[in-house]
Image: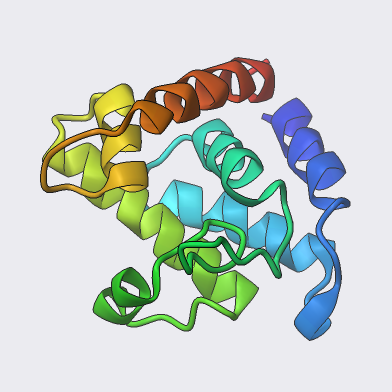
Length: 142
């Protein structure tokens, strides 16, 4: 577990200090939220890496916001401010847990749900998304 905590801290150095949040605060949020919602920390880090590459100011062309690239509507439904990095992580991990519950704890299906939404079709780009996260997950799980 200590080795894994070090990985979190090393990766979180890449996160900028916007909003006055230190990388340690972001790392602690990832660690605590993953434990609280029973989502593997390596999975959370993998989603953040794929979604925003650890950029707390990331904004997609489709309007997804922050580290975990939450859509504004999703953020509102969860009750968080997606521009606040700590709330963004908590909301993102909560949403991963929601998707895991919805998809019978199948990680690939939960990732498809997280990326494309819970209600149906999966675009081709989601398959690449899942493959990329699988590579990161293997790395972060070492």
